[in-house]
Image (cartoon, rainbow, N blue to C red; front, side, top):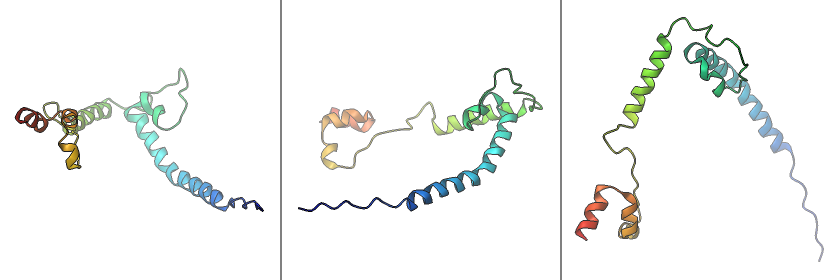
Length: 124
């Protein structure tokens, strides 16, 4: 029984992926620079959280802000988006199952926690 060693995979695929990653990083660097510049003016306290920059203790962070209009607008926009995406007075997530066999199981109906499951439990 002769066991032959399989040849090691060529590193050309790894090199190709590494080169692609380098190219994608280079392509995105301009966008990242613009985003950092916007964050410096709109929300300087959080600009370090998104772009892998180090927060230097004691550094001036608000020197780029002209007034509070952008920061207030950003907070209001965030509140508006939150109220539209996750309204307080209604259900915005639910569980469903596609398998008809699962729909008949009482424990699965209890997991759903919606009105349909409650009506099926009461009538059944």
